[in-house]
Length: 208
Image (cartoon, rainbow, N blue to C red; front, side, top):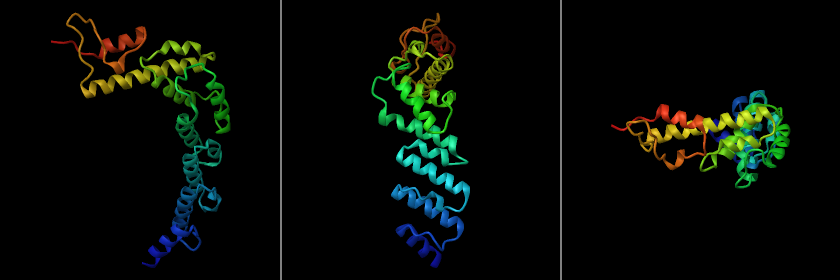
């Protein structure tokens, strides 16, 4: 009972001293989440300090904190960068647009390499994911070849995700007995794209 009261008091006041080490670190993390003030250095264990800065970065959407979130620094940076898109990316942003210069700066600020394909894949998932119909041809406006390939492959992954959802919710429909595909559900519509057409043909059942 005494330990429970001490824990409750510590959570309320933010005074974590006197708690056992694991409870102390959990108390520090909880207080940082509540106040959004970086006192993560007060945690005793390295992994707790990293988790603390990860959570603070997540709460504040400041990926610069992730550089100090070891051993979770890369996971933190990727997560927070992706989560921050909703706060600054304008509606209608497209591959190869001026926002990519801003993103490149934010990737470096987060402690990642600007040529790391992972943040770019997350970026293209965001901008292509907002498209109706899906237009992988827009990836042609991306100047750097590795990023352009990341854009194209991310577009395929988005389409396959949509195809799986359509199959699972029963909206995929079927092709005619002669293999003609006919109209696709709204979620699967895309601009001219032979590769996506082939995916549909391979996975859509034929009507009986």
